[in-house]
Amino acid sequence: MNVLPNEHAKLITQAIEAAQAAGDLPSLEIPTIEIKPPKRAEQGDYATSIALQLAKPAKLPPLEIAKRIIKHLQKSDFIASVDVAPPGFINFWLDTAWLKQQTDAIIAEGDQLFQLALGTDKRAQVEFVSANPTGPLHIGRSRGAIVGDTIARLLEAAGYAVEREYYFNNAGMQMQNLGLSLRARYLEALGKPIDDEAVKYKGEYLIDFAKDLVAEQGDAWADEDWQPFKTYAEKKMFEMIRATLHRIGIQHDIFFNENSLFEDNSIWEVLAELDQHGYVYKAPEWEGASDEEKAKAAGKDAATWFRCAQFGIEKDHVLVKSDGIPTYTLPDIAYHKNKLERGFDLAVNILGADHYVQHQVVKAGVTALGLDASKIRVIIMQFVRLMREGQEVKMSTRHGDYETLDDLIDQTSPDAVRYLLLARSPDSRLDFDLDVAVAQNNENPVYYIQNAHVRCAGIFRQAEEAGLTDDGADLSLLGDDELNFLRKVLELGDVIEHSATSLEPHRIAFYAHELAGVFHPIYDNVRVLHSEVSPEMAKARLRFYRAAQVAFKRVLDLMGMSAPDFM
Image (cartoon, rainbow, N blue to C red; front, side, top):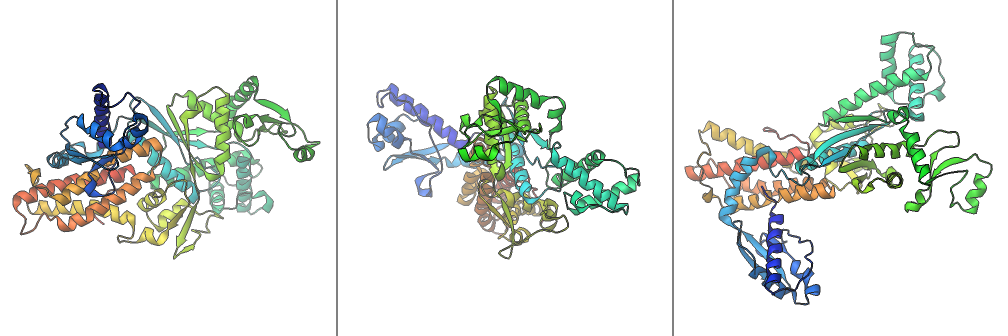
């Protein structure tokens, strides 16, 4: 199915070009034509303000421009009528007969409803979660997990070939600390005294790992250093993270190990390349340092700096510390170079709010290497608070300071987690209301949306028991309520397109709730099995509900949620 605003825009473009050819409008560049449903139903099904945009360059009143445009508008099977309204709007009404026939078109497309060609022959990568394997997934990473997976689903719906990637931070001091922490817990499990300072990560999950390790190895590792413990903990932690993600329906295609960038010398090759292009220097302090900063750095050994201030960053950043150990900026740049060299047309990063400056530095590094940083799109996630009875709460004390995704799923459900973490713009702080998440009523948006699909499924169970089918349904019998819902379903293509191009996955969550809001009153008014409903009308309505069920299943799947038949 085609995206209706795009079809309207094509007709308007053709009409403007015809008006120019006829001399009714002057030759001018046609701007992007925005078509959208107006605020009031009496203003039509779709409208555009293009005439207002053309008024200044055309040197004509917008109302006159609108009249000249519709004079040249070609007829279309989906448009019943067009008019103009002050100060220059062009309003469209959909053809009722055409609209009723879209019921069959929706059913025919099924799970591929509004599968677009926007990304045909293009490859997209979405990198998300990418949590350090030093502890369970916490709530902050959970929001990024849902947003990232939903963006991947929307890009697939837009026609992209999508790869989901997890950047596995398994290098650096944090991993050494993980190994030291597990070693201490292992010795403790053997009954040996330990230094509390050696336990860098306090969560009880390491106590559990240590017990497992004792069961497997006995005291054979008592004299080992931190490296084998790091390897063991990393493997166990990774298994835990993957199992948690599986619970909410997330599966990555690629797990990229940060350590590989050290093993194949990628980071040093990137450093050499940046140096060759003149973007690297060694100094105790950055080149633009104030006198006070220079005084503080006096006597310090030189670090290796990246001249990223040339790209609009506030100050230069260290790539390699004075002790020769790289900061995380250098492998980050090497990783993104690797991404672009794999041939992606689009590389989406889902990052926490604490990475705002870092992602700008990385894009500057990619640009300095002569690569196209515009292919990298970054979504910055704001923080999540857990709320119960209006108060912020902690989910669990079982995992040290962690508020874990597993705890959240246990207390709510995978579908509730997905929807409530999605239903707000990523750049806004989000309050996850536990009371709402577990409510079995329309106050819970998850229940409200899924119950629409459940109601459709219930109608088909009842129809089957009554021996009623929708074969040969006369769709001309559908009424205004059904048509209003079909109009809303036909907005889905535009929602998918805008969500995918703007990388705003919360749009699909908003739309799902709006779609349910149109549906539920219809369910109460449009009966199928009722003594006052004729057999032919019952068939038509049953066919309509089949289309509604298809629409809800598609929307729920785009959000990674289940489409239940019972609740």
